[in-house]
Length: 347
Image (cartoon, rainbow, N blue to C red; front, side):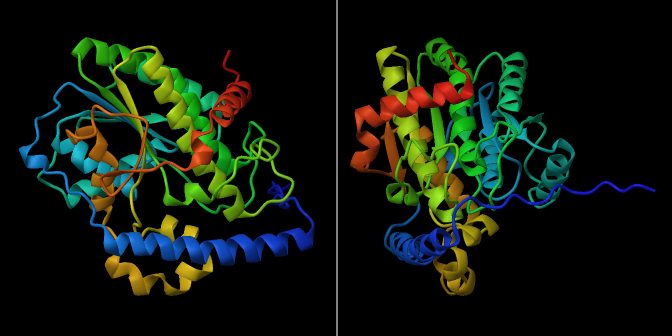
């Protein structure tokens, strides 16, 4: 009787001495510095709070959200439901997502989750992203808010079906493609209602520590999970600025933002913190944001009168923060846009 054997795990590229060097540089040195800076920001600046009960309902408006109902997405769902949005969620496993939402609904019995639609979407597959975008466009006649929220952090080395390093494709490239495929519908929605629509990328304070190496974007010669995570968030900020410039050139009322939600004590956060936060993170957990605090922070630019008419912003704790110079470099922006189009097959 034959048995089906699993494919052996991929061996991360790089010589052993390169891996040791990167471990000490990124997993220890950079992780400690980034963690201390992020925690300091957490304890010195308070998270913004959306006064949802006093806000105008968005009945008939559509929000598209990437990622299943877990972590920050649950806080986003809760606010969007209270505002009466029609919600489209792109998820890998529809049945599992329905079960998770049912569990969440039990502890939020006063809310109605009937206006949430799950559509299949796999961020590791450009074909899946195209199919998801097509399903969205067939399902709805408008898109008022696009939330590119799904992400991974410090994952084991993996190549996607498209042959790209998984963190780069999940965190940046697939969301780049999705934005490109949905932007015309978002532009048309803004023109129809004569008020801005928003595209929000869930970013991270770590983006400023990343470097864009065009020889190491979609593939890498030496893999380190932290080293490869940092530039994905920088690319995300650069991509946000590129789309914002595009909207300005086309005189479209669409505003783009990259938002650091703060430190949320979820499994992803502990994974991102490595050994430092894995061992000592519980000491700081009482100082960190709740899921709802993080969700309010992400949604803040879409509903704050101060920011909803201003795009091209990187934001933390409800405030626009100066963008690092390497993200503002026009040559880098242009080169990344061209490379992203090439990798995704956009003409």
